[in-house]
Amino acid sequence: MSEKNQSPGSTAAQGAKTGSGPLNGVRVLDMTSVQMGPYSTLILADLGAEIIKIESPAGDGDISRHSVPTRSRGMGQIFLNGNRNKRSVALDLKQPEGRNALLAIARNCDVLVYNVRPQAMSRLKLSYEDLQAVNPQIIYVGAVGFSERGRYGGRPAFDDLIQGMVGLPWLYGRASGLPPRYAPVAYADRTSSLHIVIAVVSALYHRKSTGQGQRVDVPMFENLVHSVIGEHLEGETFIPARGPMGHARTLSPKHRPYPTKDGHLCTFVQNDKQWRSFFKMIGQPELIEDPRFSSQLNRSKNMDAVYALQTEALQKRTTREWVQLFTEHDLPVSPMNSPEDVLNDAHLADLGYFKTIEHPTEGTLRAMYYPTEFSKTPVTNRYPAPHMGQHTEEVLREAGYDQAAIDAIVAKGAAVTPKPK
Image (tube, rainbow, N blue to C red; front, side, top):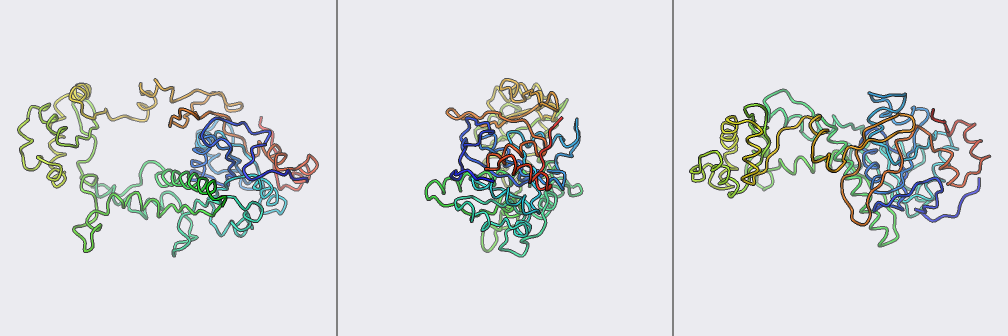
């Protein structure tokens, strides 16, 4: 094997398709699977970064490949939606040849993101120190369950587990009066993914200023505590406490879409001006003098009464009628949508938000792209979601392997180079 003399982050990779996004030129080695890690690297990819996704042939690749529905094996819908703009390299990291190949690729990467436990990375001899030895400027990002500084460090973590640990099912049960339940979305995974993106961009900024790479740990549990308890700390904000925990507005059993004559309505009337307009709209302008509703402070102390008032008033007209009236009074309003309603939303249609693409093996697909709009560095779509190992040979060649070296590592089973049908 002959290695190319490239600096960290070099984009001399011949096989990579460059885009115009704000992270164009950043090279990320992606050792993640399922949702938390892949969603973060999806955002980085959409923003223009080059993503090299490492998958294990022994484990049949990223487990999300096997989600349903699917048209062909290993190309499930969660994988297709979470892995566009990435190239897949299949390496057996338990074999020395596979590990050496990963280190060769890492020499020319800016960032490594992983979401196995740190102990597993150490067993593979892929710790921060191991990566730093071949690339002193690398940013080594661990998407972990818990901080290593606490007693939970190293424990396995999954979305449902973390939701339960931060109290989300309890909050659902308390607010609804029904048995506790998880949020009907991978909330812990998805919100933690955003923190990973923030961490990567922040560390890149620091490296640009100082030339220094670093290790970054992004723990799911602590980050979700930050989001959830930040809202529900309430009286425990003060020492001694000035009341119990739990935000009254969002915990009220009446905090839900309001029933109308023919459906449900979503609104959030907030300041005094909006409440005057609302009371006038429902034909009860005198209610602004009611001590329960006369100020933001008083309303926050009487949230059940506020919700009860709106619930009673909004049942008297259809959703369409209320939307028109709210709009005329410049009050925030929307019908309650189902996922199918979102898919057919007129505003999103104006934007071309849901795009139709042709995948080379999976046929016609519906896709969403990164929605933030940049005037100078617009995001572009470069790759459809790859088959496992689709780019192994291409990326190894970029890392300095000649054809004989590639054939040798494939023959050992330390790398896989399948040809998708």
